[in-house]
Image (tube, rainbow, N blue to C red; front, side):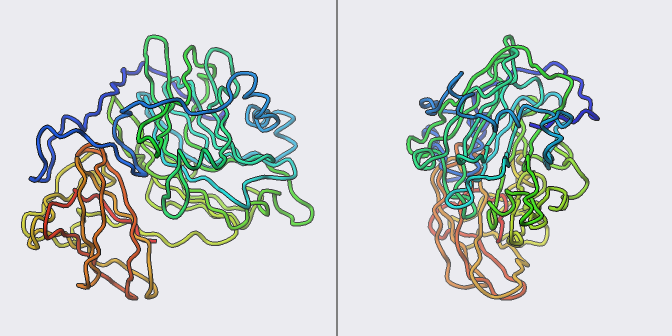
Amino acid sequence: MHLRPSWTLAVVGVLALTISSAAAAAPPTGPAASAGLARPVADSPALRGAVAPIGGVVPGLTGAAAQQAAGAAAEHFRSTRTSALAAAQLHTSWGIRFPINASQGLRATQSVVTGAGTTTTGGDYVYAPTAIPVGSACIEMTTAYTPTGPNLWAWDWCGGRDGVGKLTPMNASFLAAYTTMVNGRPAYSFDEHKTSTTANTWTAYLYNFTTHAWDVYFTSSGVYDLPQFPFGWDMFEVYTSVNPATGAGYYCKDMAGRAFESSSIQLSVNGTWTPATAANAPTDTTRPPSGSSFDCPALTFSMVHANDDWLDQIGTAPPATTSYEAEASGNTRGGQAAVRSLAGASGGAVVGYVGNGTANYLQVNNVNAATAGSRAVTVYYASGENRSVTLSVNGGTPVSVSTPGTGGWNTIGSVSVTLNLAAGANTIRFANATGWAPDLDRIVVS
């Protein structure tokens, strides 16, 4: 958590959030969509559809057992910067502060560090990320890297409980059920939103990739305990002490070479899920901080896509990534391909009516590569049904990519593919000679 006494926040009334998806009522863009088909659930890292269907309950410890398992990591998390505990260690963070008081929910896809570099030493703790919506939210979802390894927490901030309400070890079983690969890293997708205005009830969900449903993680109700403080998204927060052997925080060596990414960050504002932007989710600072201010000169902070995709890297420079909007004026659209507005898309629009013949296509121009070679290309799209799209680089042989239904035509999902780019400017053409492609939002090249 982060407490910033210099900020003030007036908590105002909020509107009840309807769980049913707005996307379900929206007409599909592609002419080939059939009426009456059941909406498929998206196995997608964005997972921006409604929380439906509801599945089971995520395994984990609750109550006193959760508190005991969290141990000293929870005591550090609870303390403020002015406490004796904080004075003995550097406690700092970088993230988002949410100024929109009407926000009633938060969604994101968060990478999980696995293998070497999952534990901390020297009394250090890394919380990456910790996330709580404004609007008197009860639950702060936190990935905590501790001396015993990574855990997922639901911190309960309502009714005077002020502690870990639920703890789930991020072990092999968790990774198998609740993560998928996003930009080359295992990542889980969570949704936290208000489920009762009367009781100020908030519920957090995780998407289960084995059952294709949202599982309930934790529910809490009551009076919010810290109305005097604003909260938001701490992409990277540490409690650290300097290791005399290295002159940097212990975690800096423990997690050397590891990356932490948060993507598809969304806010529920007046019942509508909206990507985090500079306007609705400004950062703590005007620019990414220096790793030295975190006692880790090797730590770099960057934004893959402002402000809904963040990347932190320890030990090596973050991979060069560039986002290209489908609707950008410099691109080429052929045949029926057309732009339509979509609030949930990164640039507020997507390109539809691509495919069903070679004449209808979208060509993204000036995709730059410093050197020739393979690049990971993540395609963000919306589709009310299972479709596919072909990608061809510089007029070469098309590569077909399956694009599962995302849960509705107003719901963004993503898939990744490896493409060979030439040095300099490239073109990537999206088409489908035999059927309709999904509506295209953007691509991220890394």
